[in-house]
Length: 446
Image: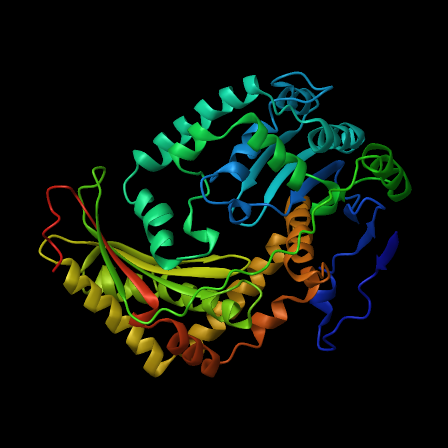
């Protein structure tokens, strides 16, 4: 076992002013003998505790033919356990004045609760049951199989643009990496998965040495540590070595063009999607700022120039999906009447080229730095935000103390960084250009 006490008095940056010190997050870290990483942040301001268990497993851990497993377990692990009856996870939390939920993405699955502080033992017991005794049986699997298929039908199959964004574009951007598969999975994989398949996945990934437990809020430090050891220390360590060999994609050499006929939409749209670096890369921080320059608020470039001034698009914007191994930067627009998809593409490309050539103004850069500093402080304002950030920095950077210092990376971004990163990644030979068209309008491209 190793124990590290983080008091955050000796920060890497010596230039923190007095106001920043008010927001320093103190925390305690230790690892149990079974590999469970524990982070505790004590704050007695309100009589609440925020608890999360973050498993380092997402859709990228799935193999061909078995997509959707991580998302499936997000559902399945609410079915009950050896000592928790079917459907009682939510009842336990709600009847004790709390709330709980879970999420899955490409790289992680997280379960979390917010409860009155005297209910910390309940939250820890429920999470230990989930980790050790989750019901992975035929009945539970069949129930959740239908739930997930219905969710896919409602959120993907029957929504405009969603299938293009979540399935088609990733499958074109990535040829080898599992990021090519949708998080929710494919219908045939959901139908073909067996109880043995799910049991193997559970036994492999939902183990203490693949998890980070974070508790934030009003609790006694010694008591919390004893409770965590009581509920979690006896859970066996997983046998797998979780260091995955990185799957590297070949550089893209030319633009990939694709037309997707979407039965759910009446307005054609263009989606320009670029493969960009992993979330821990310095370039990823710069791309976040570029994303906001393009489409954060009415004064952003895309909204001001393309939507409001030129009125070429009824709606347009950008987004950055940051992931552990790669990222996806997307710029999109839905055409106005009388504008073709090719015309809108050219107008968007003109905005990209302007940024690559001229960069950003001093005002734009300062505005974005102020935005990210404000967001950095507000994200650490609530116990649930602190819990999420401690998990995030610990998982991806192996340094939870970045919760206090990561803002410096944004503050150090220069105008030259913006131009350099835009020229490096926002190129036609590094993208998928997808036209999403109604089934009666698929001639409105080239």
